Image (cartoon, rainbow, N blue to C red; front, side, top):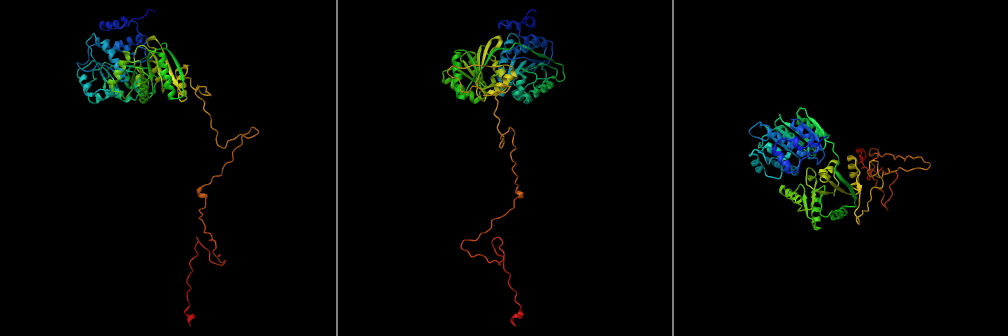
Length: 468
């Protein structure tokens, strides 16, 4: 079958000009299937792996529709793109600005980290295309500073990640505020999440839709792991791996903002040019870090999972998981920063005894086996679990129950059951007073002593006749 080209898929000259300038001629599999379906006005659920070109797959046909069709209203947004993170929103904004360079469409972005008043000023200019994160856009809807009554196309990009980040309620509120007579496009790494089914039901509003699950060849990423003893050992391994990589672009992932800051300081101390990226940074600081990394002013980007989705930077040769990802999907998006667009890449995970079972779970989930490697001079004392389960996880040592012992003759002897002693069965008996040493013994016919005291003697009553 003859190879398709963008010239056969996209008609407007303004879009063709941008594609030619950027050297884009052959569509990827997801673009080849999604673009005709979007131009046909279909509602879509698209599942495709990271780095497959999903952004171009929905932007190109959606913009073509805006250029060919008259707006339904003289004001208000016509295309809304929701995305989970500011970094991904900024990336989509840049691509959308490129595609609208030679036409009259305008693009705006609404995301956290910027003041509401500046965003309201931008919205008053009435951009046709809005790229937004759910939380901040929900605030604008509450303030009635944005109007979606004439919306034509709604795109949810990385929908599974929005649900993971707890943005589902905001997304549903936004969907409710949009024009019901619209085209819906949902792109996700997986379509099997339980929460996603509810979201799709609310999004499509009983309209027919089509599912596209793009089966592509996996990225050519060499996936390795290095055993380590503790955090200090991991830090030495990290510095050694960077020394081996020389001038290559490297992304280092951690699970916490605190650790990202610590590694930033460690690598600067070791004379590496480093950018950091985590949730405590302002929008301007995050943008500056990414720009420095893109422009090769820095060699290493130390990031939390905020950068694991949608970060599209060319020529990243190595991804290092200083901390193991918490799930297989998160791991996939981390290593997807390398090996993009058919290039080769490498991902190395630093694994301690605590991380072993998590790594095994990810291997089983992704149906892959990581290659074990070492750094000369930094071989760990820990060499993996002594025993493994069939799942690949470490086999724990079963604790013996107290009192259980094996008897001679091969049989098991039942331990004697201890009789229960209840408080209600105990007799409340106080202490008795004992005779003091040297005291005279009591007479045998004396009155009994109760609680250490003899009973009071009754006075004898005299008979008056005795006085006679």
